[in-house]
Length: 381
Image 1: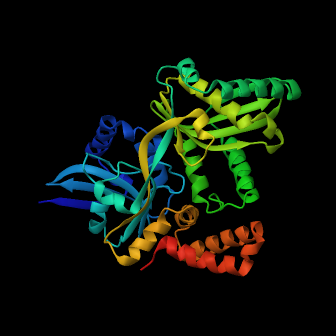
Image 2: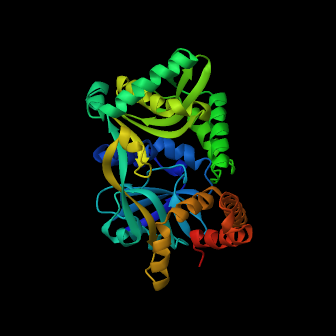
Image 3: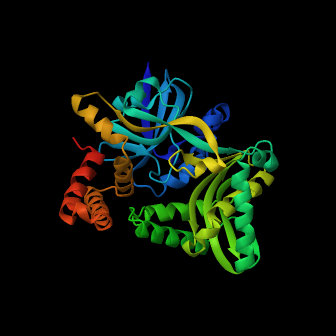
């Protein structure tokens, strides 16, 4: 019979398929991330436009699953740009590229944190490293693995913050709707201040966080870390937990307290809190930011770039663009906006903001690049 791929809604998965999903995750430690938890996939599929699941069968038996969302002929990870890690929940030796010819209307796939890329996928991809804090031996063992100068500096800053602004208090709990809205509001202000695309402007990304907050389970869901000095909130971070893994997701801090490194202080408190709750690993995403090396170490390889249904000379130049920093920024726009009009509006708005930040670029050039690069990111044939 060979390999067959059926595209379904998450709600159509039966009990046997759900049990297989859980088994695949249990057998592969790389799939322990909260983004591979079926509860995350179900929540995302309820709000992310054009969300689907590819069910892969061979000789009638289910061999794996691939959650995804469609933007024209482009396949993206489900819940992109919010899903830092993604990929097949499947038996070994399956690849995303092998599925593309069996998915009607799909010409290529764009990935940014692909776990377990097949050999056939890799010509269009660039390898990076997931960054993770190992808490499996407890928080004290973790501290012993970190740079003593870094820890000494943070102890000094903690004392200074408390001396100048009052007693410090830390909490790590399930967030309320108001707390989620507060984090989103401050995150949006930060994105505007730094001339980045606002991933929350499209609406469905906000709905996803609220949907996740509704899930009440001891082993899964949103968690909010907060650090206060006196009555003032100086830092907070929304994270996502699944079993023994926690993923740091949306951090904010008050710029007025920057000299105290409140975000770093909060992160150390978070690591101590989750270790006490049995979390064995905390994920920091990929190795894009230098600060992550203070807290975490390189873990498994993850991949970003373009996987094509069929190779072409045009694809060679597109692959080069696909691993660029600019491509990652436009990927966010394409992911958030399911329609071409919204994508062009988001692209031109982003380039106009870049032109304001870098006046030599010029507003006119910025608008033209916004249109051209948005289309390139989508790669419509």
